[in-house]
Length: 338
Ligand code: SF4
Image (cartoon, rainbow, N blue to C red; front, side, top):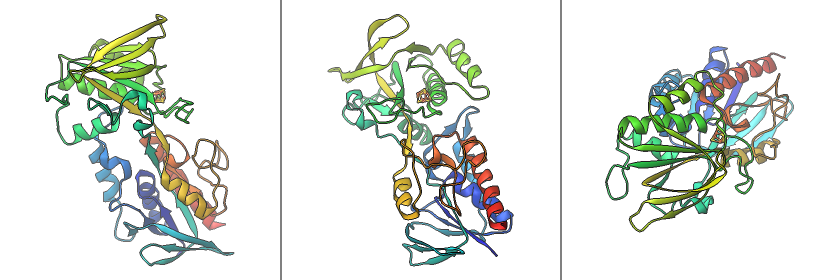
């Protein structure tokens, strides 16, 4: 039986493993953390349908049967390619002989502390979209540091994305719809609050995204301000002064808010950089893996026998990540049948 090694046990890695196993291949997953699921473990609800992240995670995990070999808390230490297969050394002492490798090393969330001017890690009432998901997931209320419900909340789009200074000029794709989802959730928890989204332009590309955006304005009264935040300052009472330019009115703008949510983008993961060296893979200027052909072979890497799937080749929604994983399983199967 031919064998496929999957590096990374997040959404793409889990889905591809299940599909490959269903096709009759022996599959091993190597995951450096102590559990499968990747970033989905830390998310509360998903756009655009507000479904529970834990439900999807449960569905994906339930398909990982005993026959799929899991190496948790394990890293790839070495890879040797000979004519017919790869020999992979793992940190748990295993030496694996495999016929193909799927790399699904996902993404990292942009470290908002790198945008020092926004005050994350300096001002307590500045948090990120990932922090907010955790608050909702733990069924906590969104509160100011003094323990009160925030009355005015500023949501800042494009933090670490489309930003030359931050080193990431691409759009992270998912954060506009996440901002709108989170803004609505805040209004549902705190109906008397005012929520302001500061955006450069809104990229509501997915099915139903525009409808959700319209509902956010009409049904929930969320206000959208076209402008990029330049700086945030903490006031003596702990509230935060936002300085931006309203680019529709062409005027500078100052606003005091009680809480700031930074919509952090997706960046190439540290794992991606590590695995690139071991497997001799190519990466693009944005740090994500190169692919053989954008339209036709989007899960083939630059090395024969090695495939790539999910957000390690660029920002993706979960839906696109799952589809990518299925496409990778098909491409691997075609390769192994040759
Ligand atoms: S999806 Fe929206 S918030 Fe995210 S980087 Fe693109 S434009 Fe900015």
